[in-house]
Length: 410
Image 1: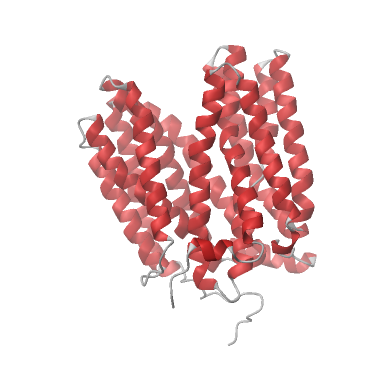
Image 2: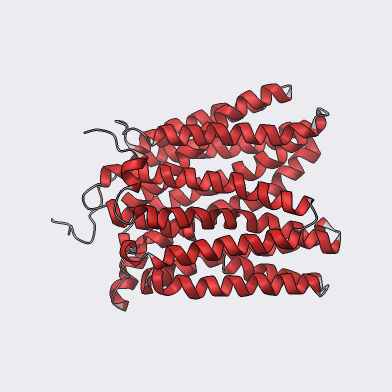
């Protein structure tokens, strides 16, 4: 059977209509956290206040996303998303107003928490739509669809932070924050308007409660652990690379290094989705985490920004493969009625890992230099490899778990 390609996926009726606005919204979402830091710092003059508000945003986003996903699966995307987007717009307006009024740091933190709690989870909802669209007759194309999602997410996090930083550096941090909200809300509204591709909501309270408990299983906890470790990798890598180039007297090299890493990741994710692989997803996961562990060990040996860049090509190319395999394995593990919740919990685990890594890697760098930070990334990668090894037995191959339309026989 020929490999699926991105063009054929986007030609699927209704696919481009939800994927493109979701991708636009993700640019805004990628701008939001950094935009808040710029906004608060520009008016308070302190990174302490900016970090406090940014931390409140991160915590409530991680805690709130699964709860919104729960409502989405109970009542449907098209009913829950519009009021959630309105709440997000009002929360951003409240934060901007508090900053303009020179509110206390405590009130600013409350504003940041409201923004985080209402961030639209367009990535989880878009992935759930791909699963609903392809699961029945075209399940073999799901890895390609999730690769496309990974590419859209990578582009969003490449364009978004650059755009908001450029606006802030030009003296327009408020414009950056408002633009982020406009893209998130605008893209989300167009996404919500595509009713035909939306998964059907769960019907019946008792049935919903039974299916909700299906998240309490070893495979889900394993995937959450993997996402937590990926978050630690991301958080530690950002701080460690910055510390490394500063130590070597080349602070301007940070941006090109991150661009090289992002570029290799985009290319690897795109190539991965162009073909179907014979190895099962758990085996692919073990191979990818093993390659990442090798790359992080090499980070401990580099002695120049050039050498660091070469190693970051390897690590950057590995991460998108993981971000494709995680939803593939999740889709094959949990019941379809709680899939959006599962995606949201994995995202929350990644966000928690990233937040924790900023503190841990900062302490390691202060104590041991940049290699101390790279040791944190190596530890996270090794943990992923060990978890992937356990997953060879625990995680099922796609299609192994019965869907609602395919009852189990005994």
